[in-house]
Length: 176
Image (tube, rainbow, N blue to C red):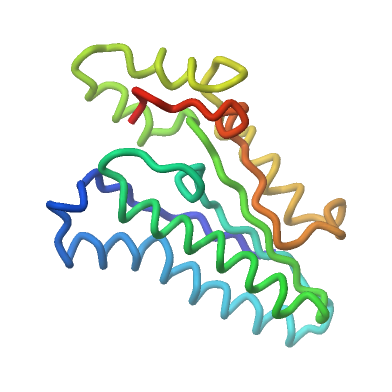
C-alpha cells in the first residue's frame, strides 16, 4: 500500500493569490501525490500482485470556502488523480481510493481554532457536522487502513468522506 498525506493550507483569496503561493500549494498537495502515485504504481506493477493507493484529500475537494482557492484546486485534483489511477491500472490489480476528512482535531486545526478572534470556531466546526463534533485523527486513520488492506478489495476509484456528516448535511455557512 501507498498513502499520500501531505498538505499546506494557505488562506488567500483569488484577488490576492500570487504565483509563488499557488505553486507551493500545488507542489505540496498535488504534484507530490502525482509523483508518489507514479512510484507506487511502478512498484505494484513490478511485483505483479497489485496494490492499494490511498490519497488523503479533503472535504475542500467538493465544497468551497472563502480564501481557500489553491487548497481546493489541489484537493479536487487529488480526487481526479485517485479516479484516474483506479481506471488506468485497475485491470492490473491496482486500487486507488481517497479519504476526505472534514474537521479533525490536528495541530493545524487546533492552531486555526486558537487564532480565531471570536472564540467560537470550535463550536461552529462541530455544529456544521451531523454528528455535532470534531473528529479524531484515529477515525481517519481507521478508514485509511481499511482502504489500504484486503477487506476493501472491491473498492476503487472512490473518495470516502470522513467528515461527521458535514458534506451530507450541506451546511458550512459561517465556517472557514
